[in-house]
Structure formats: C-alpha cells, structure tokens
Length: 270
Image (cartoon, rainbow, N blue to C red; front, top):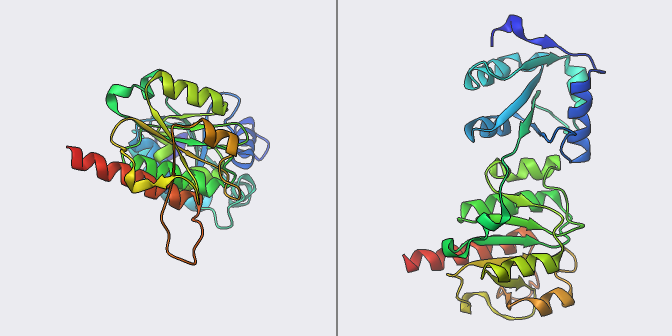
C-alpha cells in the first residue's frame, strides 16, 4: 500500500477504541478480531496466512509499517496515529509502535481430538498467569501438540501478555475456552484420549507412563494445582521427579517437561 493511501486516525476513532479495548481487556473485539502488538507478532500473523482487518502504526514506526505492508501485498488497510495516541492503546512500557487486528482460524473440537491421529492435548484448569498460558501454547506447538482446552476461570488466551508469550503459536494452535472440566473429560473419553493430571507430589513418575497414544495433560492453577475432585476423575496422575529441596515447578515449565516427554516417546516409536 502506498503511503498516500494510509489514513490518519484520531484518538476517538471507532477502530482505535476497539483496538484499545481488546488490548487492555484481553478479549476479542465485537467483530471477533484478536488485537496483537509488536512487529514480530504481526509478522507471525501474516506468515500464518491470517486475515488482518487493520494495521495501525505510530508515526515513529512508519518504516516498520512499510515492511509489513509489503508482506501483506498491499491488501491490509493501514493507519497512522501519533506516538502519543499509540501509547494510549497499550500498557506496554516501550511499545514498538505497531499493532493489528487479526482474525484467528476456526476449528471443530471433534477434529482436534480425533484419536487416530494420537493428539497431544493441554487442558488448563484455573491457570491465572497470562505469561504461563502463552508459554504453554508455544511449547505445546513446539512438541507437536494439537489443541489447548481452557476450563472456566482460566486467563484469556487473548490477553496481550499471553499473545506475546505465545510468540505466534496462538495463530496456529486451536484453543477452546470455557469448557467445564467434566465436559473436557467427557470429550476426551468419547475420542479415546487418555487424561493425565500433573501433580507436584502425587501419582506415578511421568517417565513411567505410556504417552504414545492420544493424551491430554491437565494442568491446574499455579498456587494450588488441580482440585482433588478433578484429579480423582482422570485416567492417571503423574508427577515430575525433582531434586531436593525443590518441591514444585512453575506450571509452564512442568507442562513443557510433560510435552517433551510425550514427544520423546513418540519419536522413539517412529
């Protein structure tokens, strides 16, 4: 898109108001777009073939905007705002001056859980830290994961920190929200996906479990882990052996170890 076709927006424009609300509230816009901020994330969205409704840049980021316009082949509407207005959009301390509204792909849960494809699944129950959620999405994709299921009262995957921590994995990995734990278990059993809860001090050593078939790892809240009533309903409970005096791991680190172990076993099977 040529420079002359860019539009300049004021602070009160409906587009900026929608972008600001989405970035600050961590939810989709009313039209279903995800707000993303930063050059790398916009590049990831373009590289993933997603639809972009708008590119917004500060005056000081015009050079980066021009590069992104080139990657979008001039098909994405682009807008300029003052540096001051851009800073009002985001809570990032040092914003890069680039943001976009992105439409994420839609998926069918049945397709994602098809057991013949031996899916690796993450089920997050009450996770509160958006950085942990984003990191889990990133490592789940890195180790061949198929889908992430979020129970109620779990942080939004559209939170700006979660989107940033996912480093683009949110654009490619199916995520389903607000599924009751009972419904997640029911769906897994219907598709013959084994359910495994991660716990700090209970269950079998993770390395003793056969993780080659379809498996869903359940990961609980950072402070308390999975509720006992949820653990009791799962097919298995696993722990990660730790050297003393360490008693527990960050939720995202524990999840990464579990995903890696599943991927390791599956590579050995090939």
